[in-house]
Length: 202
Image (cartoon, rainbow, N blue to C red; front, side, top):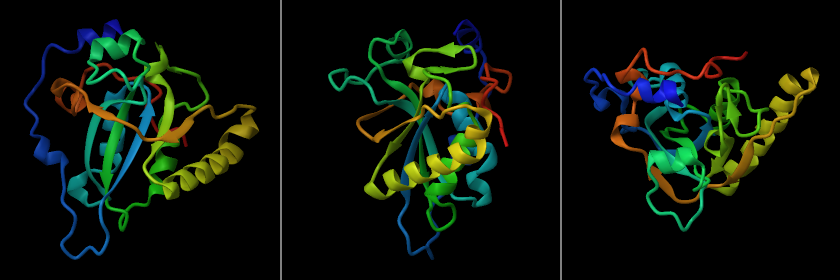
């Protein structure tokens, strides 16, 4: 937490437009939304955009970090409230994607590849409900896919190690964008705090 706060002070100029793309005019599909929580949202956004840069037409159109999955009575929570743990919101990443280029199943698998889904309310040294592993689904189809991919990942990568995935799979609820300085944070601050679990694990 202290490391994260220390890294908030210097931010080079980053144009968010460089991390956005539009659906192809030839596309016959509509964009979809995927929402994941996997610890510090800076690192989650960073690794997804590194591997699916919108400029390279790999399927991700845009991203936003924010807060979701918390007490519905709490409206527009801020970073300090969420970090305090009282609101039960998760730090999360919302992804707009083109399903004709990248499937929801592929995004779910990548989500599992890039953090530790076996630790309850923790990623690395970051502990608290805001750092939980969660998939927030936006349709019955996403729910079915998330459950199927989770079972496959469990059997292939974690059961042989004697570990159990603890990721929550729940229906998406109210979303609140995080403060502007959190958006694209690690692109603005390349030397900023980066959770060590946000890497390719296989």
